[in-house]
Structure formats: C-alpha cells, structure tokens
Image (tube, rainbow, N blue to C red; front, side):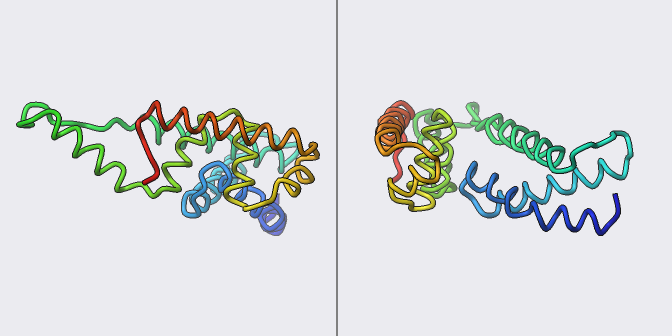
Amino acid sequence: MTNEEIEILYNNNFKKLYRFFYYKFLNKATAEDLTSETFTTFINGLKSHTVTIRNYEKYLFGIAKIVFCEHLKKKYQEPIFIDYENASNFEDTVTTTLESFVEENTPEDILLNRLVLLPEKQRLVISLRLIEKLSLKEISVKLNKNMNYVKTTQKRAIKNLKAIFADNRCTLD
C-alpha cells in the first residue's frame, strides 16, 4: 500500500473512527487518542508485512475494536489503592478516596462509565438522545425503528441507569 493510498484511507475513515470512539466514551480527548492509536497500529501492521489484507477498511475497524477493548481493560482494571497501615481511620480514608475519584471525573465521565453497563440498544438510544440531542422522531428515523420502540428503549435505559446509580451509590451531583 502506498503512502497516497494510506492518506486516502485515513481521510475516508478518520471521522467514522473518531465517532465510533466518541460514542463509546463521550470524551473528545479519549476519542482522539484511540483514533490515533488505531491508525498507528494499522500503519505498523502494514510496515511489518506479516499479514495479507484483502479489505483495508474492515482491517482498520477490526483494529479499532481491539483498541476499544484494550482501553476498557486498562480503564476498569486499575484498582484504587488504600494504605491501610497508615490510615488512622478506615472510614475517613475510604471517603477521601471516593471523593477524590468523583472530583477527578466530570459528570459526563461518570455517566459514560455507567452507560457501558447498559445493553447496546439502550446505550445507543440514550447516547443519541443525551449526547447528540436528537429528538425521539429523529432517533426513530436514524435507527429505522418506529417511535414506540425508541420510547420504550429510552424508558428502559433510564430505568436501568437509575438502578445502576443506586447500586453504585453514585450520583451526578
């Protein structure tokens, strides 16, 4: 693949990949980083010549899915460390740790962390509704579904989000 072909592939797929990551994480910086990582991995794969690629676009989006999964693994497997030996009061230490965690995350980050717990259809409808600010009618047209489907899916997603926040004792405030 020539540099010109890589540039054309980049220009044709950058927005698609960026949107993919943005809808998953609702964070511009993360979407930019993961899009960049996807293209870097793609180009490194081309340079190594270890694989014969029939469809470059499918290969690129396959890499994007792997990058997405790897990012989730890193993000959700980072433990919060508490120094139990030097903690004078366990409850104060836990409260301080949780408060610092909540302060580091914006309400959007907190919501995003909980959205990944929803079923895919509910996550899609809620993302379109809350992030893209689409009306129910626009969502039904975009998804090629009837209005009742969109309303029901939204209602279930909100119910599930309430339960998720209640279970985690986490609020957006």
